Structure formats: C-alpha cells, structure tokens
Amino acid sequence: MTTSPFLVVDIGGTNTRVGLATGSTLQMETIRRFRNAENASLDAVLSSYLEGQNSTGFAGVAVALAGPVQEDQGTLTNLDWVVRPDDLRARVGCARAVILNDLQAQGHAIGHLSAETTPSVFRGAAPVENGTSLVVNVGTGFNVAPVFDTDRGRIVPPSESGHISLPVASADDLDLMRFIERAEGFAAVEDVLSGRGLVSVYRWHVGHDGGACSDAAAIMQAAADESDPDASRAVASFVRTMGLVTGNMALNFLPYSGIYLVGGVARAMAPYLERFGFLEALQSKGRFSDLMRNFSVYLVTDDYAALRGAAAYISRLGHTR
Image 1 (cartoon, rainbow, N blue to C red):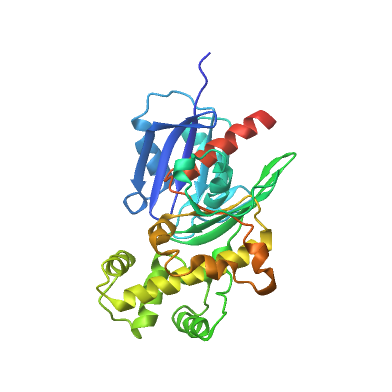
Image 2 (image 1 turned 45 degrees about the vertical axis):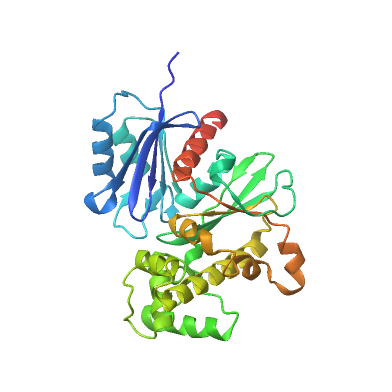
C-alpha cells in the first residue's frame, strides 16, 4: 500500500523551504527553496512548488513559520503573510493542516537530527530521561523554545522571547541598551541578537551610523580577515550577549537534555564562541555557575531541521488522533 506524503513547509524571515515527508522522514530530493521577496504570499510559493510535483494526494500539510501562532492562525513577524489552516487545506487538497512556530518545529526535530549535524560546543552532564531541552535561534530574528519530553509525548510551547528586554550585566551592556533604545524606542534581545542586530552593535562600537561595513555579512568578513577592529569588537560583544541571554534562558527551563543553537547567525558565530567567551558568559551565574555546567550545548547545522520537525510533529499527530 502506498502512503500519501505529508507536505512540509518552513517559512523563515528570508526564504521558504518546501518538501515532502513519508511519515517523519524528510525526502531530501523533494526540497525546494523560494525567496520570500519574490513571492506575494505562501499560496504563490505552494503554487510554484506543486506545479513541479507528481504527487496527486497528500496526507496533510504542516507549516512552520517565523512568527506567532494564535488560534491556529500564523502571522509572519517580518512579512505581511497570514497562514490559516482552512486556506492550506483548500490549496493542498487534504483534510489535515497544522501550523506551528518555526522554533516549535526545531524543538520537534530534536531526536531526528544526526550526530554530524549537531556538533558539541560543550559537554555537560549526561541527559536525563524525559529531561528538558532548549532550542535557541539566532538568525534573521531571535527566539527560544523549551522542549519538554513527557510520558504523554513531546510538548514544545510557543514563545516570542526575542522581544523581551535586553539584559544588562555591565556598564557596556547599559550603554549598548541605551544606544538601541534611542534607535528603536525599546531595547529588545532581537535588536542585538540577529543579523540586523549585529549591524547595530557594530554601529555602537563605531560611535555613529558610519563605519566601513554596511551589513552583517561584511562585518563577519571583516572580523574573519581582521581588517576592521570595530567588526571584531562587534562580534565579541555579540557572542558575549548571546552567552548571557542563553544562560538566562537556561535558568528559566533547566535544560538537562541540552541546549541547541540554531539559525544562520548562530552558525556564523561558531568559530568565535570559544575565542570571545560564549561559555563563560553563559555559565557565569554566581553561586549557580556549577549548575550551569550541567547543560550541554550543541550547534545545529542541518538547514532543514525545521522541516524535519514539522514532519515529526504532523506524523505524531496521525498516530495520536
């Protein structure tokens, strides 16, 4: 008997990835990537994708998106796209449609990723049975998602942690916060820990809106070839803030089953984590510093982790309903 595939979609801040999954297994050869700026809506993306597919029926569709999901409706944070289950069912021609935040999908991907795509940044204590994990996304935006494995299955609650207040642990942090506040009206974590946030940190080091680098890619390149001291300082500040925020989140959720860093900017920062004190900033929590060393940290390098998570999520729903 042939099983109809699931259609799985990951809408990020810049690109949308679409593919098919058999159960929880992603079919790599079916994945296509679409630039959001070149499409007016998700419907346009799906139209382009489905035109090239031979599949005539789908078991369901699961959409992971970079934005809040309320009452089954998803709204993109950096796009004017709105995603609704009824629209998905009508467009794809299936009975089941689910929408979840992209970080929730990343959480559901844990356990479906290979060791090669989750290299260790720090080895802490051995994972505990049914322990909590924490997914930390640093990319076009910032967010975290706790992952609770329970006797009744996995629970990954939604979050919008990128929009909480930027933490202040030093005089430099306070000065950066005030710099961001003047520009944005409110200094949120995402205003530093994101691609655009790196540009703001660079401008703070330069002291005005100038400087040799105009975007995040240029800053990373200048830091790599050591051609601009302000670029290196910006990366150092970014890494330290990333550790500080991740440590704060770890204290909220106690992730004894590991912290997973995801997102393009997190991967770009990987060569600098040790050099600029990521772990020191994460673990330096006064009398709780020893506790922090229990939490292993991994870097997720699988660009399709959210698609795998979406497939795992909708596949599990099929077994529980």
